[in-house]
Image 1 (cartoon, rainbow, N blue to C red):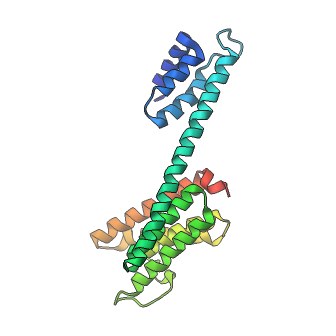
Image 2: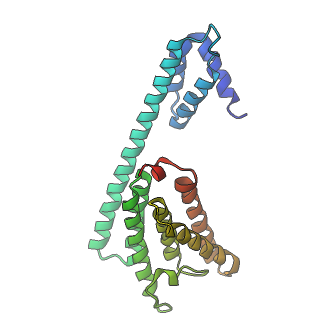
Length: 234
């Protein structure tokens, strides 16, 4: 049990000074993630209700401090995301004004879409990922070896990395807004990357496909599989 040392320490601190000392001890940690964990563990190590050592004031003090800490961290994280979104939007404008090629502009739209997704702005996330996808298709279609304008033409083993990646991201976002085609779109992107890892003899293409597949699956688990606030708040 990796949390056992934390539980033992919290139990010892509580016995020394009650709820006030527990809160002071937790707040003394510089690691935000550890503070969240300690507040959760503190509730678990409090004496049983029938135990004379358990005071209702201690329970309330620890619970209120834990809630306040959680709200502070959530607010701080949201401000960071909003700052990142503004930067991504600025990047979209700058790359457009500087005449950057479609693939570079696509990355800026993807970054904006990712921040929108993290903030729970699901419709806006769809727009961001779809814009990135469209620009990636433009970039792929500009290649002498390709001429198909539809994204699906590139979502296949050995297909264009950017198109497949953004196609998968757009699928995740579409699934989250209730579009049944989103899951199929995501799975098709994953299958394209998987096919590349199984058939390509190009080492760089193999690494890119594995990276893209891992990225899509991680994002899908975070926002769909884990049922996070971003996936359920809308």
